[in-house]
Length: 378
Image: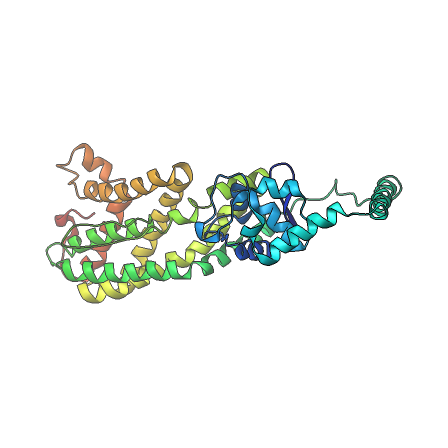
């Protein structure tokens, strides 16, 4: 968003003044690397304020950063800056120490002509600024129009797409976990014609829901099913960035739609990845296509729930609820409407019951002369 970046230490001393594209390269040369998914300017400001300590391997103190910038540009270092940095000339290194000493010597031996030339340059620049401000017309930006929702949507779509490409390894791990979950649940879940494979699909509903709400979860010791947080990642980690950009006037609708559009890729692909293992290890009577349609609807539903949890709750609480809800709702959905009483009534409004009924119906349609009502499926 900016061409140049200026970072100032306490007292207004310059720590960096240059291109935005080279700021990370400069600090990396000092041994200060920005962690993943952290806004670089915020990270550098935290270091300048002493909130975040640079790695001990870098050997750089935040008080030394103004001195490092002067040495980087070959500026003469005043003695007070050297004293404020709290370092000795010998600790900076041979070449740097030589620069400090020569800078100090140069400042002591500065001639009258040099001072006069500096004053002349300063006065000329002040007069130039005065003339530009009073006599030259600056570009009027008071009537500029904010970018529309569609234009912002295109911008955010490109940005979120680049973020997902940077997280290719995380996405690959997510798909690998889904493959393992499909193998485990497809192998261990028993297929029974009397229940239309309902037990296996119950585990599928739990597994898919928890995977979409992004948390490692052990279903039981026998199943050993691990799932990773995926849908919470869309909003939990970028919440601070969103509030800052929202204060500057971005469209919340464009921001949300861009995130949701990119996540549609996972909504379409993840059921295929899971079923590629579960379907062939469990071998249900229903077709692969029927199972896929149900899972797409299920993943889309739980992704929306994960969005709400990520937006309105703190990350830790959102993860806890994202694990608790699918398990509890699946158990509630198994309650008999006639005998379950209050829980059975609540189960009629749970998405887990709708998904399980859809799975059972897809299996029951492959039977001949079967009365679905006798099994409690209406």
